[in-house]
Image 1 (tube, rainbow over the protein chains, first blue to last red):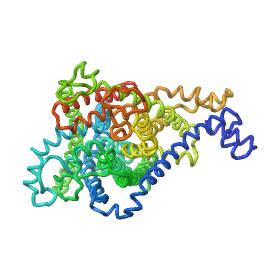
Image 2 (cartoon, helix red, strand yellow):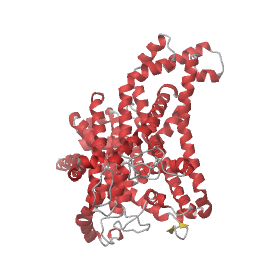
Image 3 (cartoon, each protein chain N blue to C red):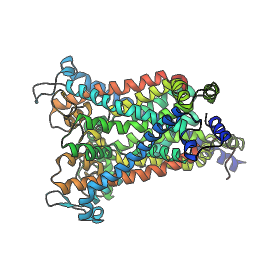
Image 4 (tube, chains in turn purple, yellow):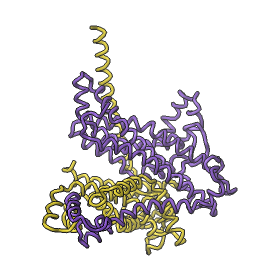
Length: 331
Length: 280
């Protein structure tokens, strides 16, 4: 429609730029329609701006009181009125990194299998099943984590890990089944369908000529897949960062299995605490304005970090999936 | 020759091992899904009864059910759909039919990043703009929080679906002299309606599983809802509260409530898949 209407407006060639923007066809109904839709679209930008404004305004008390020390302080003590979020930041980053370490190889494997190997009649239903993992609500993962995953880890996984790798500080500490490792694994299960779905799109966008060229040169199946992976590398990086964004902000499941103790411990078995969990647990019980303000500041930090992370991921993924059809991008 | 033969065998072996590993990854993911779902079914079915579905929560030892939570979740879904679906569809229309320029790109980017904002942050935001000024938790605030999560999902699926409508349909309508708004609302949107509807259903399925944004907006309640201006129960918050409680009876109820929730969420997902199977 666009070029047709544009041509008409161009032929008319009259009226101010504003009139042409509002209604290229010169129809009043069109002007009303376009303005309405534009307002709703601007509302989206408004919502994001309102989020920044509201979160900043409500965390001002805490920002004034602690400044940058908020991020470096280790003491989170609502009773004394001391709020340092370092332990939450550590817990958030550590659990997300564990999740990515586990999830990325699996996601790559799943995407490669579904795009490069499985015949259509297998790839479709299996792809749907993997996507269903993303449809399971966070609180359900949490419930399953508390009553199934945590006991299994406590009995069958963590003791052997401690026995074999106990010389590493990572695998020392009390084995309870509740802690950083459990949180990371739950996150990994939740992030895998998201990362693998995006990697699937990225791999599917790599031109078939790349595969044919590799095979024609005598490459084995795996060598051909490596060529495809190299071609899709920026998009795959975007998928991983997208998964990171999801893991950083995930709340319920992690809250239920990570132990919720604000401490910085190298041990994967020890309880930890994430930014999102702290908000979820303390918000309704906040003691006084400073406490609430500190929690809102945690929300603001989470908002800004995930906004930037998702923005980077989008740009990376878009660059790959939009450049389809080209015969071999410049090497 | 032998040197070459060895390298060749190694390459083939690597290929065979790696392509098997990818299959195992997939198998493990599907296995995890089946293990989780069957465990929910097995644990949940035991505590499920008609009484459980219609009763409200009672103190430990006295039974009780999730009737108020089911009603509460439906009310929250109605409120959020009431705000979220029309707004999301309008944004989708803007992105596909109007916003082709730089502003459209900005809006698309904003909508995409909105999708990735943690739902707990949405909860904090709604707390700041609705709960604090009103000084109490309410069903309305919970519904608005869910609507904020819905809008970007609906907007992007609507945009994708509208873009699938062939240009010739728009051109035909324009050529007959219809203004753009009639072309869009009378021809393009109806042509994409089934796709938009399935996108809306997926968005509903997604928010019906949300817990974090409800914790300090809708809050939760042990009674049947009487007003949109009061705190309201929801399946997800109920599951959370029961799961972290120390009582075995409440744990059993959490599993049964989860079975109900999963039936809703997976039901919608499978129906949508069935309806759209020809398109993929």
